[in-house]
Image 1 (cartoon, rainbow, N blue to C red):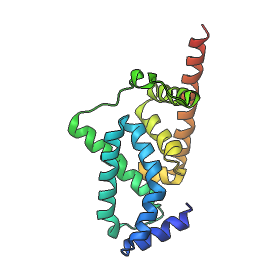
Image 2: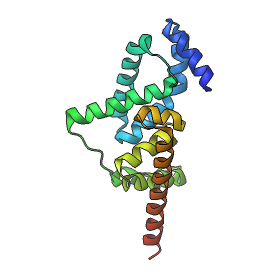
Image 3: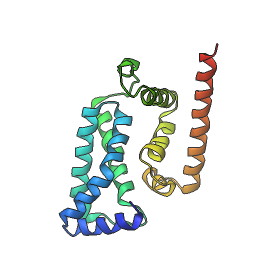
Image 4: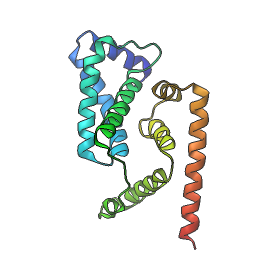
Amino acid sequence: MSSGEEQLLAQKAQGGDREALGALWEALTPKLFGYLINVTRDPVLAEDLLQTTWMRAIDALPRFQPRGIRISAWLFAIARNECRQYWRKSGWEILFDPIKHDLADNGREELEDKILADQILFNLSEDDREILRLRYIADLPLNDIARVLNLNFVTVRVRVHRALTRARAVLDSQNYESHK
């Protein structure tokens, strides 16, 4: 969905247009849910956080002012804050569980790619994981990531580049270990 389409739907939804809100839901929920699953590693928790995110967004929608930020970036910022609030309240920590990834699956190659991506992310700092999730899982443009993280565009661009460099180093070290 283009930025203009997103903005038009957001304006209509602010005016009470339920179809526009539904269109935003349909367009943004898959990436938002994917982001939350990647962050929490728990589909049930991700579903709960998704619902809470949308409830907070719908409550705050009349007050939403674009000011150069897309509604999708605003939603991801809400989701990110919901995760932080959940972790603060529960003292919960994200842990990688290799047993969950050992389940048989017909899409073996896809599963192996997911496991590899999970292993790489697990070996990165939380800041690197977060910026890569926002860029490649949430598929947010760098400008939107900058707004979500309260950073300037150049800083985000540099952090994405550095996180990718560290991810490549993790991948290279895993490839080196597997060839020993």
